[in-house]
Amino acid sequence: MSEPAFQRRGLDDVIPVPAEVRPDPAADFTIGEGTAIRTAPGSTEARRIGEYLAALLRPATGYALPVGEDSGEIALLLDPAPDLDADGDFDGAPDESYRLEVSGSGVTVRAAAAAGLFAAVQTLRQLLPAAIDAPGPQQGAWVLPGGEIVDRPRFPYRGAMLDIARHFFTVAEIKAYIDSLVQFKINHLHLHLTDDQGWRLEIDGWPKLTEVSGGEGTGVDGTGPGFLTRADYTELVGYAADRFVTIVPEIDMPGHVNAAQVAYPELTADGVAVAPRTDMEVGYSSLVADKEETYAFVEDVVREVAALTPGPYLHIGGDEAQATTAEDYRTFIQRVLPLVAKYGKRVVGWHEMAGVELPETAIAQYWRIEATDEGTARAAANGSKVIMSPADRSYLDMKYTPDSKPGLDWAGVINVERSYDWDPADRLPGVSEQHLLGVEAPLWSETLRSLTDVQTMTFPRLPAVAEIGWSPRATHDWESFRQRLAAFGPRWRNQGIAFHASPEIPWT
Ligand code: TNX
Image 1 (cartoon, rainbow, N blue to C red):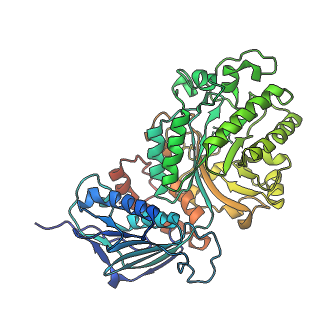
Image 2: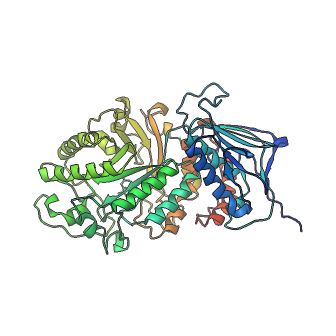
Image 3: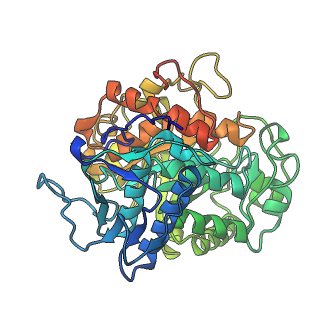
């Protein structure tokens, strides 16, 4: 029987492209029947990542791939001071950094922290043929290209956002989404939990938020009901953490609150109930800045969300508050900022929040399409970090072409080249490399109805934003990116992930 040969992969055929790659074609390693995985002695974290790697490789190889601490050709090692700086120019946070060496006798990964081993495993996965992602045994040689990779992130924050307010997605769907994202070294998932059309997180003491505004008939067109119980949310946070993803919860205020006001009329100016809304309008609802009930509500919600969230961030929205006067907006934000601090979290807000004086710990997320933004620039000058999410580049809910579906087009149509060919350090005057916490690709769900829709909008544009966030700026190259992206067609088909087969990419 002749084994169909798999295409040999290149050591730099990875997304995001690694910082340093030194191929050695004479040093390929082939994973075989007897290959084992060896993990750092005494580390339960390294062991867990070894098991994660084995679970990824077992279905397609059909090999046993035992994981242990004593022997094995694939070694995942923790090293407090791995040599990660061949160029002598690296002074960033080392947690996600790693060194990966493939030689004729095996693979050695070294990292200072478990997050680095996990990042290396994602690289290793991509170095194998696409058939590695098939759900059952495949015939062929599992060759890893020889040589050495030394890799580290450009920015500490590389995020995606999912809007589960306009359309709810289940715990299982969000877990599947996380699994699809971590392959590209995404390390934050921002969950947009509340909006005019729905409230999706159970809050102690305010049961009607989810009973009423998470129930049947909520979401755009009334087709996206559902909510996360506290237990669901906790389960998701844990699932994400196991994959080195930090959940960033967003409670959008003072605008985008119709669903809260439907459930609790005391949150309106006149205390009279408002009608549920399932249309796509924005900018019509507002919490009331000069009513104490507002802050009792906000404090309960902030306390609760902070208690459920181990990560450092709490996102308070702050966008499109057209129904709030400028004075009320300032009053409101200045009351809420200390509340977030009181419960131990660092505030993130859409950049409109930067119109108000911010503490330097606050983070502004730029989302518009304009070429300048005074508030964001001022916040950066005052020491605040910025997350770059320009809608005309990074919004995953924009259409790919004028007639592609689903999607919106208010920020333009965004093909793959447009999502790749920009740089966050050039986007706004006054906001440069050192002001950036990182990048995020938001996915709003007004037009989405299924996980398939989520995947189709995300892939292949999310990998573009992921590469901008991880890889050194000097490596940025559209021609190289589109060639590397091409290899993901069969990978995603094997993983059961829907994607937009953009004609810009020479899919294999
Ligand atoms: C603007 S982006 C919004 C959202 C919409 C989105 C649709 C932002 C902070 N606000 O309310 O869902 O456009 O693309």
